[in-house]
Length: 370
Length: 144
Image 1 (cartoon, rainbow over the protein chains, first blue to last red):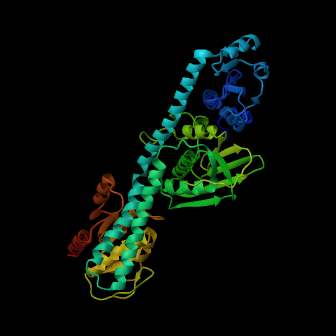
Image 2 (spheres, each protein chain N blue to C red; image 1 turned 90 degrees about the horizontal axis):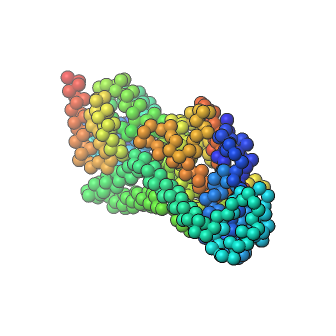
Image 3 (cartoon, chains in turn brown, orange; image 1 turned 180 degrees about the vertical axis):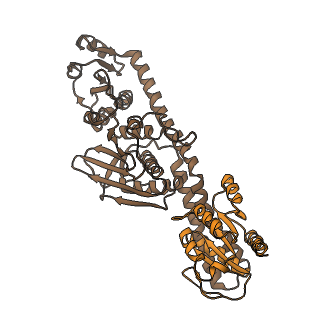
């Protein structure tokens, strides 16, 4: 059984999903103004399956929202009149704050379409910014909640080198063989390096996602980094890990957020396997899209639950073990990257989560690793 | 000094006792061996529960093994499974748990199963030796 989380950029994806389709057709919205306000609206509205953004326009061809629209495959219009006479338009949102635009819209917007502008549009922008901040906060809160489950793994990985350091230091207090002293001092130094590497990985992972511009991320490097983090949360020692990486596969997005997505998917996969099974990480660059798959041979997800797993606060884990926000946040991050996430699962056989990102891959060899 | 091959005891001298250290980290086995050998014990090593079972069933070990020190979080047969097996099949061999993770519930459950001590890494050499000495006493008492 397969479901794919809905997103407006990929209406074909919804056809395969078992999630109930919206009862009414999507609201068709045009955005006028592609500055910060227009871009913020575009980013949030584009994630909502019941809204279809028919296009965006701005007098300034360099407005940031226009670039973003191209990334999201939202049509960009040169002329306002072309956009607002779009057939079947339900709503025009004007965030320009320009009185001249108001009069143009009053005359040109066809009957049947509403206009939101002036203070109302400003209020909408404020709400959208609030929503955007909440999503970021939720992602961070869920990440921090997850780090609580790292305690056993961190303790194991820190206390082992500490035991070595203590044991060797105790031995050195009365070691007379100079060669042994040198070797053991060297072992202590290496053990300290291992311990500090753990702290470095975790502090890097737990920090708030950087606000830097989206960039191209080398996917296989990010998957390997996620494996290093995930092993604190789940025991990987009896899991057979298969990496089927195609070289130079890249996606565009926020590297911190993508790392969080991978850690979450890997952790879920290993938890589904109850410590024994095969975890497969796969990257695949196609002509018009990039796919990343995380598969397990675990318990699988019951068909009646499959449609709900991307809902906020939905969890099958016992109280205190899961926030129910993991897959919800993953979906938001992937949609922000203009991707889709789908799941294929069979009870007793396992699950495969597939991330699909449209657009060319590997075009730019610049990869990012933190 | 005694010689060891593939974790099996192949030679030795008069000693305070024979201890099997079960831990997946070679570094841990190395320092525990170092500490206990200085205190006059013969030390055997196993990297997981499965190897520990092989070792204990090998030759004279079945009779001469005095104490086991076992980690919890290990591949294949983990510490919990191994401890349950050893408590059932070799109830006379005292067990000491040496783990990287302090877990009160697990410690209580294991002590109830008859584990002599639950030590959390990093443990000082003196404390480890005292624990092994106490386990040796229990072993001797059991033989009386």
